[in-house]
Length: 514
Image (cartoon, rainbow, N blue to C red; front, side, top):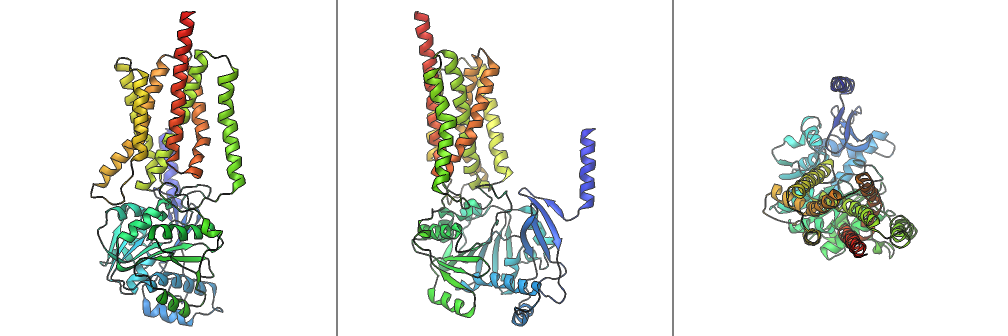
C-alpha cells in the first residue's frame, strides 16, 4: 500500500511539472526564456537551474552573421536581455580568440552546448565535448536551440573530464574548461564538489600532455581578482606548467586562465586592445601564497584562516584526546575499559578510511552518489565477507590481522590512480575501489573477532558507533593535511586499538597469576 501511494504521488508530481528532471547529480529545472527581436534568446532557449539555483543558459550562439550584426548594434542603452546576450557571447569568444588554430578542440564541462554551438558557428572542424551529466547531454541534443550535439562535427562524451583526459590519445589546438560546475550542483557548504578534481595540478598536466605543439589551454571561470580561487588557479597552473599563466578578467567577474606551448603574450595584448573591459591580472605577494590544488588537496572552494584552524584543533583535542587520556589514566585499568576503548578506536578509524575512500575515488567518478554507492557497497560486501570468515574459520590471531591491516593501509597510501593508462576504465575502477577499501576488510575481521568475545554486546556496539561519530569530526583533518593524511591518522588509531588489546591481554595475564 505504501509503495502504491508513493508511486501515485510521484506520478502526480511529474504531471504538475514537466520542466523538472532528476539527474545523478542534482535536480534540474528547465525554464523557457525568449526575447522579442533578440537572435540569442530565441523560442527554444532556456534557463537551467540546478537544485533551484541558476546553473546554465541554453541560447542560440551558432548563427554567426546574425549575432555579429546584433553585437554591433547593442549598446549600454539597450534592454537588459540584449546587454546580457552581448555579455554572454563575448565570454564565449575569448577562448577561441586566444587559440592559434582551432582545427580540433576539446571542451570540458560542455553543459547544454552553448560553447560547442558557438565554436560550430566559428567553423571549427571538430569538437570533442565532455559532459558528466547524462540529463544535460540529452537536453543539449533535444532542447537546445542549436542542437549542437547532433552536429556531425561534434563528438559528445558523457563521462568525467579526468576520465576522458586519462584515456584520450588526441592532440588539441585548444582545451577549454568551460565554466564547469559553478558551485550549485552540491550544497555551497560542501568542501568537495563535482568539479574539484578537474582543476588540480595533475589535471592541468594531463591537459598539457594532449595539447598540440602550438596548442592553448584555457580555464574559464566565474570569479574575480579578490577571490582566493583566482590565485589558486594561477598557482596551480604555474606549478603544473612551470611557467606563469596569463589571466584575463572582465568587469563581470569572469576570468580566463591561459597556458600551454602556443600561448602568445603579443596575441593576448591584441585581444585586450580590441576588447575594452578585458585586462591582465597578476597576483600580489599575498595571493602568490595561495595553496596549489592537487589530487591530494582538491579543495578549490575552501578558504582558511589561522583562527579557524586553531579552533578546529582545540575542538578535536577536547573531543578525542582528552577523553582518551581520561579513560587510560584516571579510570580503573581493567579489561572492560580496554575493550570499550578498542571498539571506540575501531569505529573512529573506520570512519576515516571510509571518508578517505569516498573522497579519493571521486577522482574516478566525480563527487556524486555513484562514488558513495560504490564505496558503501564495497564496504558492506567486505564487512559481510569478514564476518563470514571469522565465523567459519578457526580463530585467527589478532596479530596477523593487524599486520595485514597495516600492509593494506600502506598499499592504499602508495597506490595512485594513473594519469594515463590503456587499462579498461572498469578494471581501473575495480582495482582502485578494492585497494581503497581493503583496510576495511581486515578491520572488519578485527571488529568481528573482538565482538564475538563481548560480554556486553550493546555497550560494545554503542561505543563503536560513538567512535564513528567522533570520526566525523576527525575527518576534517584532510582539509589541513590532505586526503592521504587520513590514511596515516587511521593507522595511528588502529595502532592504539592494537595497544588496547595488548593491554587487555596483559591485564588478564596478571589477574590469572594473582
